[in-house]
Image (tube, rainbow, N blue to C red; front, side, top):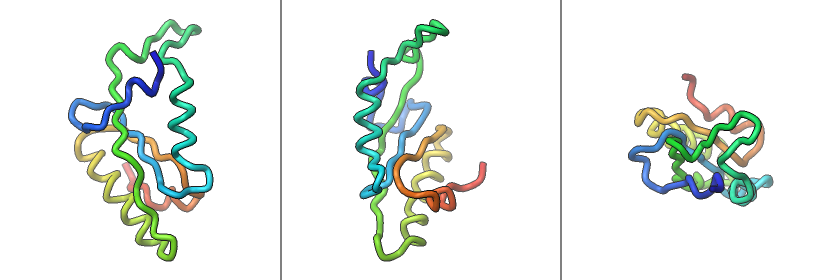
Length: 105
């Protein structure tokens, strides 16, 4: 099974949210394509991520090219909702300033 096969679109029952930033130079779509090539089984440890791990992909956060603060606000809103629902998250795409939008905790 591939990592991409573990992705669902509903937050309910998920463990980890994979969030992208739209229109980033290192596009989040490229990261999703890479997940399509990765298997969920790790030969070295013998761990199969497909046994119990559920990932959710709520899609990309829309970027406001003329307002970085608004873009960060949008990312923060999504991350707070994901955290409120008890999920871990990973954010892809964007530049180093994206870390400013990640709420503590």
